[in-house]
Structures are given as C-alpha cells and as structure tokens.
Length: 112
Length: 422
Image (cartoon, rainbow over all chains, first blue to last red; front, side, top):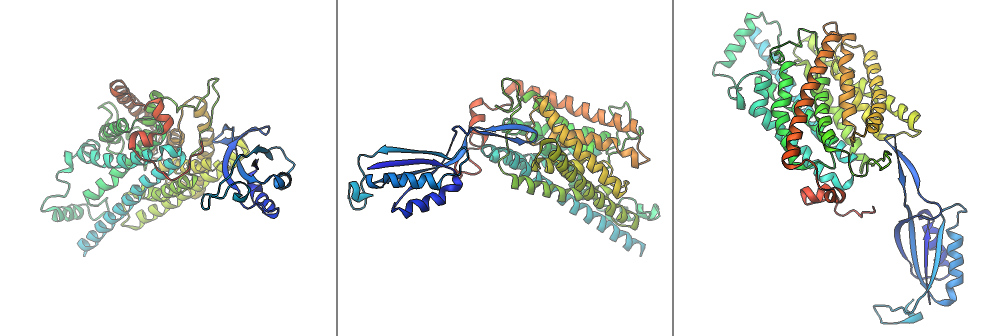
C-alpha cells in the first residue's frame, strides 16, 4: 500500500476528486494549507503600502492506495491538477505500512 | 395665537435638535464598525469595547463638568430643567423680542446635541491608537479629553469665551459651523499626540525602514461603518443650524443636508480615482476615507457654498486624504484607520475654505483658530499621555500585541469560531 499526498491549486480540487473517483478511489482527505515553492509569494497593495504574501493558499489531498492503483492515481492527479503554469503543486508517494477500518476492524487492502 | 405659534416653533426646534442628536449618536456606531473593520481580527473585541466605553465616558464627563466649562451653567447639569415659571418666562422673553424667531429650544435638548459631539471627537482617537494601546489607559485619557480638553477649546469657539482672556476667536472672524476644527481636528490632534508617544504597531515598519501594510480584517464592516457615519453626518451638520422652525432656517437646513451629501460623494469619487491612478487598484479603504474626508471638509461651512462648490470642496478633500495617508505612513506615524489624515489634515482644509463662501469668516481668523485648537489639544494631550506613560505605561506588552489585545485586555475573542491561518 502507498500513501499519496498531493499539494494542488485550490481551484483544481473538484477535478482531482472526480478523476480519482473515476479510477475507483473510494476516499480522500483534504486539508487547506499554505506554503511556497518556486512560485514564491506575491505582493499586494493596501492603502498605498506594499505587502508580501509569503505563503500561498493550496489544497493538500491525502489518499491511501492499493499498490495496483498507485500509478493510475498519480497520473490522474497529475493530469487533473495541471494548468501548465507555475504553482501547480507536487505529488509525493510514501510507503504505507498498515490501514485499519475502525468500524469493522478490517485491515490492509480490505480497509481501503 | 402668537403664543401658540411660538410654542409650536419651540416644540419643532427642540424635536429637531433631539432627532439630529440621535443621528449623531449613531455615528458612534459608525466609528465602531469602521475601526473594527480596519484592524486585525485579533484586536476586534477590544476596539469595540473602547468605542462603546468611550461613548459612555464622554456622556458622563460632559454631564459632570464638560458642558459647564464649555457653555457656562452649573456642574452636574443642575437647573437644566428650568424653574417652575420656565414656560411663562420663555414666552415673555419671546414676546419682548417681537417673536423674531431667535433660537428657541429646550436646554436639555441642547445638552443632548452637544454631548454627542464630544463623543465623536473622542471616537476619532481610538482608531489611530488601535491594536497596541492599553484599554484602561485609553479610557483614562478619555476622561480628561471629554471632561476638560475638548470643553476648553469648545468654550473658546462655540462657547464664545476669550482664549485665556487674551483674544477672542469670534472677533478675529473665526467660523466653524459644525466642527471641522473644533471636533474633528481636535480629535486628530489628541490622536497624533498619543500615536507619537505610543509608536507604531509591531511589524508595521521593517528594520530597513520599509513600510509594511497590515490589512484590515473585515471590509464589509468598514463599509457599513462609513455609511453609518455618512447618515449620522446629516444630524452633525444639519443639526448645527440649531433650528428649523421658519422658512429661512428650513431652507438653510435643506442646503446643509444637500451640501453634506454632495461633498461626501465628491470625496468618495475623487479618492477612488486617485487611488486607482496612484496605486493601480481601486483601494476600497481609500474610497471609504475619501467619503469621510468630503464630510469633514464641508463640516466647517455646509450652509453657504453652492452645491457645485460643495462637491468641488469634497473632491479636493478626497484627493488630499489619499496623499496625506501615504505621507503620514512615510513619516512612520502608524495610524491604522487614517484618522489623523481624514479628521486632522482635512479638518484644517475644511477650516481654510470657509472664507471662500462665507463673508463672515476671515483667513486670519481661520488660521489663528486652527492653530489655537491644535496647539491646545495637542500639547495638553501630549502631557496627559506622557503622564500616563510614566505612571503605568500606555502600550501593551510585545507578547500581548502579538497574541492580540482581545484575549489580553478583554479575555474573549470577536470571532472564536474562525480558523486562524496566520
């Protein structure tokens, strides 16, 4: 099993969710986050004084996946979140040791 | 018959005074909303506390001694209800004057109308010192400002007394219809003195001297507050005609309403365009300050300008206020809501344009009057702030400032259920 974590542009969230549903992913966790990458921040003007927005708002999605689905999921997220412009985000894949469904006690692949 | 008409006139003028006073009272709500919108969320509950508490303090202090200092009479307003023969005496005095329509209204309505002006002057201070001043120190200053500092300069102007027995502003041709100088610039002068001793908010100016913006938390509230102030200003200026009960005064009241409204409109449009040209964006906060600048500018004389002149005065005020806010910021005077520019700089401008349309006023009188009010309020405020600073400090701790004065001073938050991102 793998844990896929992706940082994406907030306005791409619906498309990413749909793309993951389409390949059979049955659950994702979404968090509103802030950060910077190559895009860095940007400056705004307020009452004539500049201020720098150092951290831009992004969405973090986390998906636990069976090994068989990983490549498809990475591809689906990469495609759905892509705008071709700087700041589209990143995908990270981690090994996942165990998963347990709390209600039934099922574990491993069955819990996903 | 004449007595009945006179009594009716008395009733109308008194009623008019009371309604206008109630409108001006509502400006306290306007200031509260404007200021709570332009500070950060973590300082909202404290600025609201300051706004309502200062209004209450102003009302009590003006009742105790402020009104007596400004207009004479006894402290605690004793005797304001009039003696047992009050009605007969008033009618006799009016008959003696040939029912000439001199100002006639209840003394209590006069107090009510005057007291809300004191509160307005004090409201101006709270915005400039927002986000970093101790609550109780601020209220301590409010006691002195509303009970002594403001009533003294009010006595020299509207009260008609000589300045320390030396010279009379009225004789020099000083005229300030509804208080561009007496109320607004006075409030700004007290605020400036406080800000100079208080210093800027933490993080406002960088180590290399760069100016950083600290955006306000709630612009819908700031906009609502500005509209409320605009509405209240009809009472502020309209009520300052002091009466309504005959054709000449009714016309004057109507002109004052018209000019007050159009000056605000001119200021708003001018500030919006100026901000767009200067910064590249239509800065809403500048638009709000522009409308208020138009209102402050016309306050010194809303009855004599033509509607076109009033609009132009408003436009000039709207341009001035944008550049003034930027300049004040460059001087490292941190004023979160722009009160010093809106009420102080434009207040002086309002005084200086009075002689253009009012033959009864002179430029010399206006300049001497502006200087008298400014020097008096600034110096006495500086002394009071300095004493407070020496005795107990006027600024919250750095830690409290970072966490927000809501928790530190009030023990509660304005928006406890909001997620904080930064």
